[in-house]
Structure formats: C-alpha cells, structure tokens
Amino acid sequence: VQLQASGGGLVQPGGSLRLSCAVSRRGRSSDYYAIAWFRQAPGKAREGVSCIASNDDSSYYSDSVKGRFTISRDNVKNTLYLQLNSLKPEDSGVYYCAADSRGMSPCFIGRGIGAEKDYGYWGQGTQVTVSS
Picture (cartoon, rainbow, N blue to C red):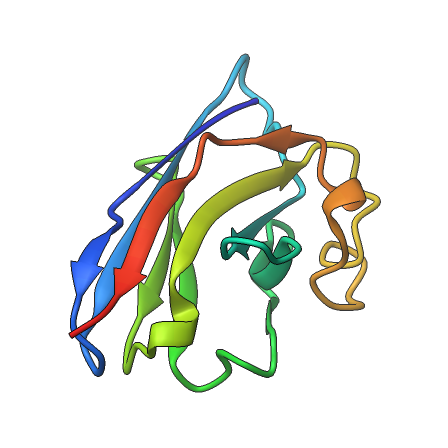
C-alpha cells in the first residue's frame, strides 16, 4: 500500500482545509482495513486525529477535533479525505495518513483510532498552518 497526502496549507483561524490521501492498490482486493490521520506539531508526539474502517465506514475522532473534522472516502478514486473546519492555531502540524493492512487496528475492530504502531504504512505528510 502506498499513500500520498496532500491539501495542506496556510489558513486563518476559523478557516477550512480539505486534506486528501491517495491510496494506491495492487491487485483487485482491498489493501487496507482502515485508514487513519495523525498529526504532529513541533516538539510534540504524533497524535491520532481520525480514522475510518473499510468494512463498514465506521469513523472515530479525537476529542480535540470532534465536531470540526470529518473523514470520508471515495472508493472510485481510491482517495480518503479529511475535512478540517473551524481551524484553530493548535491544529497546526504535519498531517499524515496511515493504513492498517492487517485488519488488526482498533479502528477496524471498532475500538477507536489507536496508536502509530497499529498502522504499518504511512504517507509523507502535509503541513497545515493555522495562523493570522
């Protein structure tokens, strides 16, 4: 599984962005069981923001973004999205998409986003800066 994140940029507080994660697949079967978005601010640990499971589209959000961010996917385009609304300066950081290719992540089994170790494939990250 290969992941390509894009869509980051500079936005004012209260603004919106839509991040994309293009997933390349090999063969005819699905190569991922869940996709998650993580973010990392300078000097801070990487944190899970949201995830979506491929079997039933169940989605989860961290408390800090719940109600403001929305995760979705387009199976025809093999692309996942993270809509970021009502952005705050503390949302700034590098956003990464990551894939669970084994079906063992908490997201796939219905227990939340999980940790970095639950996702074996990562994209390169896209920078989001929220500043006036």
